Amino acid sequence: EIVLTQSPATLSLSPGERATLSCRASQSISNYLAWYQLKPGQAPRFLIYDASNRATGIPARFSGSGSGTDFTLTISSLEPDDFAVYYCQQRHSWPLTFGGGTKVEI
Amino acid sequence: QLQLQESGPGLVKPSETLSLTCTVSGGSISSSGYFWGWIRQPPGRGLEWIGSMSYTGTSFYYPSLKSRVTISVDASKNQFSLELSSVTAADTAVYHCARLWVVTDIPIAFDIWGQGTMVTVSS
Image (cartoon, rainbow over all chains, first blue to last red; front, side, top):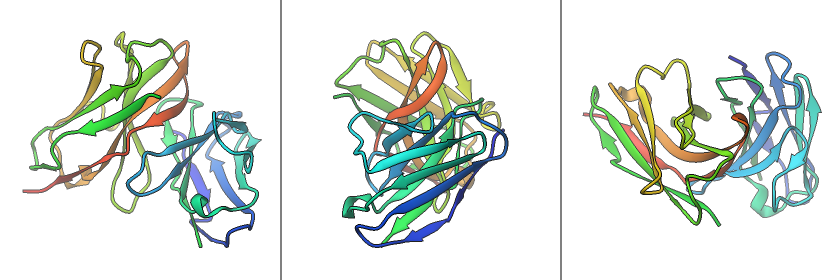
């Protein structure tokens, strides 16, 4: 199965700052990567698909990039609601797998 | 707007079967272009995909769980279910139901999720 490694595990930032989250795949997955936002007690939020396409209703401050094995989720200017845990997920092959997550904290 | 809601016991004894149901509201489970499935998150760990199924019966499962997992779709009730047999403490997790957006059975992303339900395996 394809292993996704996210870094850093924790990112400590302030509102208004830029967040850069990394996801690395154990083999090339083309651009078949999605990103999600998780908060305790809430339904996870679908952010990005195919590396760089924002899901419906996702603000422009969220952007994704990358292809092959290296991917990035960027939040251009953190808002208080953005402090959460972010996961990447590949769809290149079954089984579908997730990264270990990056916590963005104040 | 389509929503998913998990339901089921919060406590299951070791060696027994974990059974959860996800109720779909605001849309039809029979819509083409989607699979329906489950993802879990053990305490302190990341997300683990369990399996997904279309309403027509096409299914995919995580290999190490496949022998213990059954996912079923009931279009008449607009629900889908998870059964995980022979559970151990390692199956303790928050279980999310989720809609998997597909194009000709090729997965794209989990576009709608339930908020999750905690299931503890303990005697």
